[in-house]
Image (cartoon, rainbow, N blue to C red; front, side, top):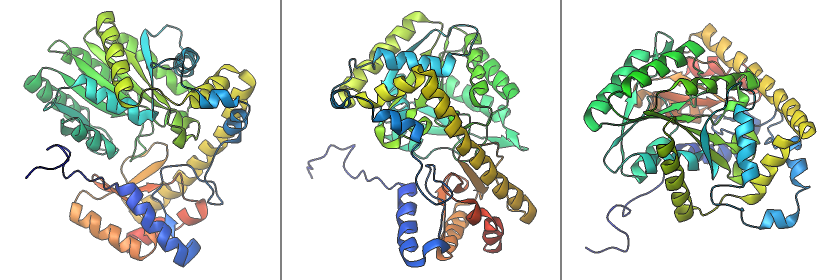
Length: 409
């Protein structure tokens, strides 16, 4: 039977677990009020339950001329001032220069999706973490890619052995590797790799690159909410030690950095010693941009550039943001310390927006989630567990939450 849709698109239906759980939580909240713990939303909320839009960001936005807000970007690749701002934001404290190309994208999601589209051919395999952001799967399927996982944890730390094994298996089968690493502040576990773990990863991919091209897709969505601040970004210097047959694509999200989730601006930052391949990737990414989203939000690029290039505005932003990093640390301490006390097993946690209860069995996970919802606790089902968004739950509701959950298991 003929249909209006093509064979690939016929029957596609988006069921987003986060939005579905959030809707259920909002319905319950209308009935039960503050009894409801809504741990579904991966955006910042303050202790009064109000969505956080940083004054140090949205104040300067009001100073941008309406014509700049209305007009197209000056370049499909992204405004030059924006690209300079992104470079300095990420690499400005490094002693050595990072050779790269920067392409503006609609959020970190645009950066990830474009990378998958341009690196692999239909039918090839992308490697993702065993616990990871759900849309990685959606983007892979949209680009006709298959998925395989590396196991994230063993004995409470990153499972380097399985990481190396998985990358070698994929390299042997298709002659190229694209692997997603979401770091720092991993979604959904809150784990951040140690510097020595990153050193081992660099050694692994350098050795693997003797067999074929290796591409690391480093999703840094939450980089500006790590506990070490700009000092963490010294990590990027490690990419200068990569061999010529290795490429890194950093997916940067201004959505998280600026509390500008709806503004939809981010960037691909592409790093490789192979200048010809660097130029080819840039050209392909710009071509894809024009064919899918055309140009990125001009006013959001102007806003990011304004803050990044003005020392006074930047210092105000960092000071205000630090209050919420401290709040995240306080919330995390409540959740992790109480979980340990009642023996509620969490995946290894370092910092960030989320913690995840470890429940490897899918049936047990779904059953517990339904039981929690009946008790007005709303979480999100993820691979291997239930995610709790500490970024959106006030401290008063986190106190005692681990025991409530444990008692229902």
